[in-house]
Image (cartoon, rainbow, N blue to C red):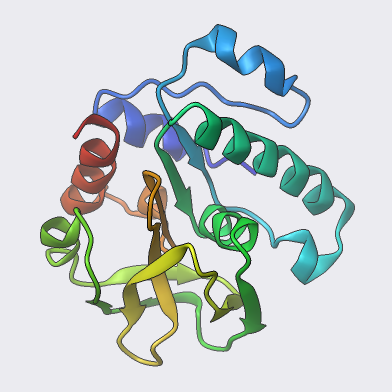
Length: 188
């Protein structure tokens, strides 16, 4: 479920991706000397679908998230990636309508080190059927959908963990501010 455009996007901002497939031994990640983790989109969480692949992927991404927290690695989640972060920290979800194959504006709320960049993103793409119902206590809302107030971006209160529901890799051409957000998140 890894979109091939991630390579192009990360290369354009001088980041080198190393895919961490579900069959990799998490203990061997330290040998790769990675400096951050991106949890990408694709399919629903197993709590939303019960799909066998989602169960495997959830387990793997929980392990990646635990590794990132234990090693103080920045972690950036996109769509499903944001949802796995949110679920890991006790968030619950609800089914939503009108969030698949559309664009909408976002409203930046709360405090974030990335607020100045986020304020420059005029509208975002949307490809999800589930949204946050109750946000976990360790997380804060950073952005909401202007149309219905669904949560579109979150961050952790103590760790360098950020999640957004829109897909920067699906923009053509890539949005300058989305790229700047990811670059500053990992290099800032």
